[in-house]
Image 1 (cartoon, rainbow, N blue to C red):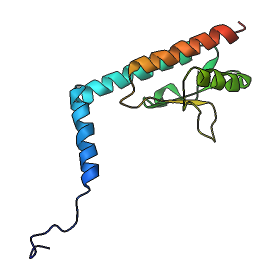
Image 2 (image 1 turned 180 degrees about the vertical axis):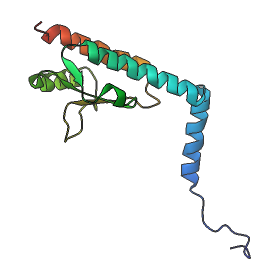
Image 3 (image 1 turned 60 degrees about the vertical axis):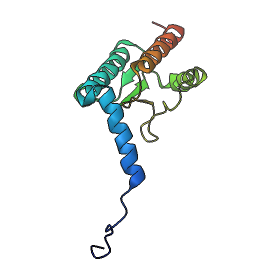
Image 4 (image 1 turned 30 degrees about the vertical axis):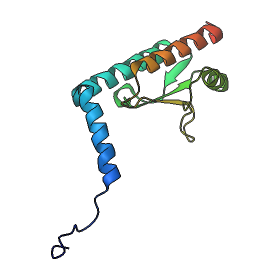
Length: 134
């Protein structure tokens, strides 16, 4: 390849381009530190609601909680299908948990705005008002 003034291989142009777009977006949001701060705020808000709401409970120890994928179940398993239906009817998709664990998983990747997390919290509170027997 040296003798032909050529490259050893073709660079993955599309991968490089998408990496550039993502890095530019990250920079426009204030960099890694700012995204970390936002992700912590999103996770903290949702975990606070899960811990407060009598219908839901987290599936892992507090010290092991993920900021990206918040997993939770219903205190009463009979309410899982009604909550899933309620969420779906209100435009929430992809909350279904892993097939071997069940329950729900809220994926809160970098681009998800905190307003989406607040909307999920509002949905959980509305469901609690309708179904809480305490």
